[in-house]
Image (cartoon, rainbow, N blue to C red; front, side, top):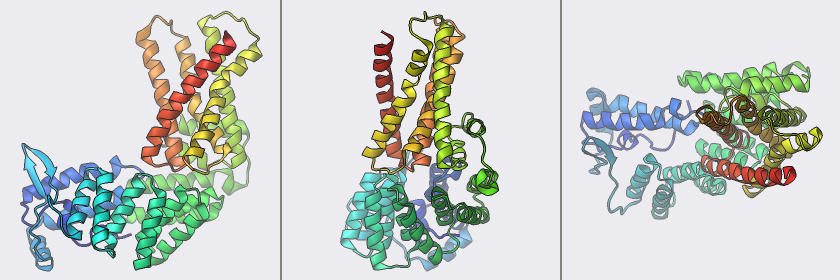
Length: 443
């Protein structure tokens, strides 16, 4: 198991309670944190998995009187109350007037728990200023910066940590995540490899090194790393991560990577449709991982053509008059697909994510197809029946939103905060562009 290095052996700090806390306060703190960091509520977040394991370990010790007494004999008492309760609500108090590096670290940890990452970064920075060799503060600031999508800041922190101690596996791991987030897969693999060399039971390092190998089309290495990660996740009883990892391995083995067979574009399209349409949040990455670059481009274009046909069919089903040639109507139906490609390229450029035009085509096709499909369903219903047409329109927009969110967070490894902004921006830009261009050509 990869030992998390954030809190050391301070179980009270892990739960955010004082050493004089009652059993009831410990239970309340544990339930609060367990709801926040449970792996089932944070799928695909290795940091949450590690934190939940730390929380569980701390609770197991502190909730047992005998174990707690033995633990207290090893840990010097700190007269720093960490929690208060008010009217049944759990509120974690801060160090009101921090003076030492540890005080700022504790308050930063409090802000981390309530997800006020900017404030947490400020306090960890102050802790580092008071103690320039405070590795735990560097690691926590590194984690916060990664959550906020500041990959360059993560690299700076990792460099500082490794200048103090080259043997901190977690620093190499976050260095790999930041490098990969900036589009540098091979340097990321180098960082993961060092992390694994220092801790060969580090499942997250194996997992993300496997993902990086997959991006570089080194599929045998990817399968080997992902199998190792799955085995370690299982040993940790992290069954959700184990299942997800094994699914990726299974997809890689079933695809033409392992067999040497090349499916037709239509077969690849149907495979992608079956995996992603009913599960846009969880099925898109497995579908993407099964296809080579040329197949991704083909599937994306097929999705675009399919979407245009859906728009054309809905046009005729509604009963609108045909005042332009069918081929021109078909080209107008391609406007949303082309618009998503162009805006995708521009957004990726401004986010400084490398990616490729092939990936943009795939994302555009898979994103616009659900909306086009629901347009056809809406065409079966009279426009006046708003009780049915509005829900169908909302479902179509929701599917497109989920697909875009999964695309940017999973396929391009964009941070959560950037993904939320990017999806909103994409929907706004494309709806405006499509309205203007379609109105112009139809008028």
